[in-house]
Length: 393
Image 1 (cartoon, rainbow, N blue to C red):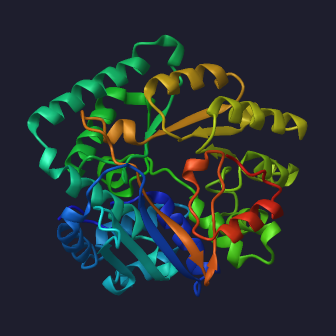
Image 2: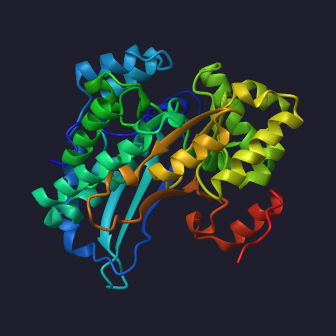
């Protein structure tokens, strides 16, 4: 089996899941899979993917895993008690060849948000590994090791990057579970004090690392349907998060409606309440400059705030961003594909996004149009109008 533990996922799935348990236990959602890479035939692997998902649905949380989750200060005891009884269900997920017959596959996940939220990351990891299985070889891993050592040297050999901290964010993008495990081991050994931790809860537990993550796009998207009115959905999401975590996990996601809409809602109250924000689309240098200017406008010293960069990073860009912002704010970096799927083959561009909540369309309108995903054009038009987001080419 590719997935052997339900902890083999990103921390923010658990942090969001706890919010769902306590605030939205009855929410019904739908996710859909999309492969953005062109001319990729995934239909040839559909039986393997189904078998791996069946194995995923047989997993339960083990006692040592529950004990580890209970040790995290922001995880509440009733949530761990719920996880002790939790199991994914095959009735909530379907995997079929696309009707177009062009090699694409259609994956949909439907059901209670509380019982479907954990599908996304392991399913994407499964698809990646099944696809790349035929390509795995000792030569591929040797190339990956050489590339990784060169990346590590970019940080460790430059005294100007002494305070630069990098985290592994690569679970869903990884070439394979075995390679991911090796990457984390090598980073811990060779990146040393520059290694901030990992988003993967299983590897955090195994290696004594800090598990990292707060919220993902699906959380703010779902609040479009769960909040009191659409225009207030972003502030509703942030306020609900703050009520749940009482100052913990204070990194806000900034690109569900684009930076303009985020800054309009991220007022003095949220500037003080949250530790910082995470960048995940658009130009990162422009984003950092705008966020720092926003803090200054609100009479907040940005030196004490955290700017988290996590969009398509390589180590050279990490170095550039660190040198630009290191003396003006706290900066942190989450690197995904460039860490866990850089062994000589072209990584797949695959995602699984929430598209409906309680029967209503939901959407992400980021600063990178290619990341948008909604099948209801009328709703997207309405969302742009409500949040005053200009249409893009």
